Length: 149
Image 1 (cartoon, rainbow, N blue to C red):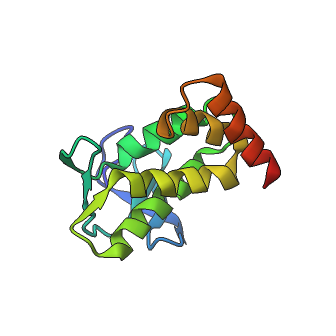
Image 2: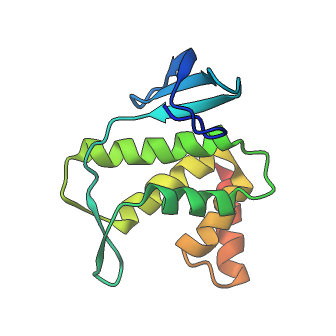
């Protein structure tokens, strides 16, 4: 593994941890400059094409999903690890489905359910866009529904 600081190819693994999605995080130390850095390994499994609401299809983009979740979690007490875990859960569920194509609605539902358990304000922020809550009454109904559960 090449050191991101000095570009040296010689590093040693200090620690290895496994996550629930089959990924491996390795903590490394460069043998030349002594800097520590992490690498993450995860299996490359096929994910389905996402069918958008307008009928177009696009590849599942893990970074695009993470970016949307990060935006809804901005300035909230949600850790980067929690966001990464949610993205990993959505990706793993899509892979388990074994389908060639999946509606964007399925992905959105997975995210909204995950955010509801993670942070209610982040959930509302995501729901405003995803559920198209375009007036105050619709927003209030969704907040009331959230408070009842």
